[in-house]
Figure 1 (cartoon, rainbow, N blue to C red):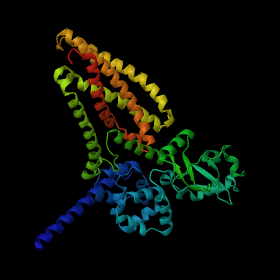
Figure 2: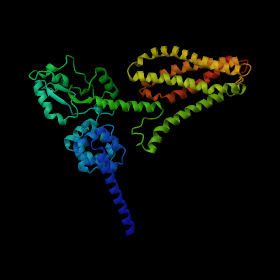
Figure 3: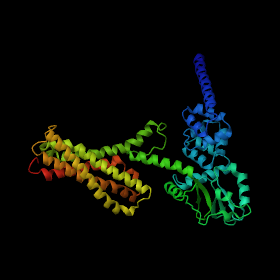
Figure 4: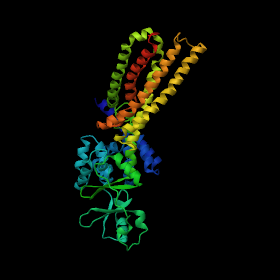
Amino acid sequence: MDDTRNTAEDRRDDEIVETAARAAHVAAEIAEEHPADIAAALDEEEPEVASAVLASLPREKQIEILDLPDFDLSGDLIEALPDDEAIRLLSELSADRAADLFRWMEEPARSHLFSRLPPATQAELNRLLSWPEHTAGSLMTTEFVSVPSSWTIGDTLRHIRAIERTRETIYAIYVLDPATHKLLQAVTLRRLIIGEPQQPILSAAPAHDPITVDPLMDREDVARLISKYDLLAVPVIDANEQVLGIVTVDDMIDAIIEEGTEDAQKFGGMEALDEPYMEIGFLAMLKKRAGWLSILFLGEMLTASAMQHFEDELERAIVLTLFIPLIMSSGGNSGSQATSLIIRALALHEIKLGDWWRVALRELPSGFVLGAILGTLGMTRITIWQLAGFHDYGEHWVLVAATVGSALVAIVTFGSLIGSMLPFVLRRAGFDPASASAPFVATFIDVTGLVIYFSVALAILHGTLL
């Protein structure tokens, strides 16, 4: 028994030595790198090694690294550190970043660390955590510079120099009413610097009212506002027009990347991942993918039902089966194209729900022309193969070619129309239009496409092959 215990202890000692040696090696290599490069290097290491490297760095650099939103190991490192060290770092992080870390932490570490924070920090984080995810309130930071309207430019500059280190970023100074603390103006640093020190702070303010957002505004709308007015930060105000915080452009860039990632994953026919691909668990990955995949599979089963319905026609005109993949893929592709275009246009507010009829009037002729192009290609292919002797489509090959060409016109037109209308239907029903993913649209049009194909075949080939 003693020998076994000694062996286990020796193994643990060896692991500790190896971790320390690896941490020392990594720390020596990256000590002079940019914080973003250090974060990327730490993401490649085991949490034990990464936490040891982080602990060896100067405090200021530790804060810079943990403040990076794309540092995947930040939450794990905070939990791996001794409590006192973790509390110190969380207290010094920017408020919005600390709030993000607590959103991602799991119990019991979350409650344990939160309870040990200073009361003022707890209150600030509770305010940020109370806002729904993906809103301006959840993205904002409470570290901004505000001054009363009675100050001069010189007063404001001295104030900025005194508090600069306690603020995450200073893009603008928010001028408040001394009595009500309502937001009066936002003065950029550029206008402040070129102003005369003895002049009132409001003399450096622009002529227009400040651009503001509501704390419940969706992050996509905030991003559009920042882009439209070319802002570096936008203040978040409450019903009393008092500043709750600011949303900065760097936070919005991260939010836009996250939003784009979610939409891209939904386009693929699955639920959006809430963790990086290499970190999400096996069962969680299955859960995200299996549901939609099962729904798509059940939808494709309707394709088999449609083919069974036309089983007699298939037996009499087996040549029609040769073109089923061509017909199905063309309709699905046209629908997927239209869906992707409309989802993006809706997201960018290029079109509104009320524009559905205008979109339909554009997609109908577009789908018809696209279908005619594909139909012509299909008929040309059949003609060349028949005349060149590559394949014999039978004595009624001209009618077969006409069937394929006509069906392609009808199916591509239908696919373009349905694909463009589905995002409007989902938006009206309160769902994310991105849920109208390409696989979903393709599956729907596969089924209807078969019905259209065989209906056209019955009309053209009636009395000959059918």
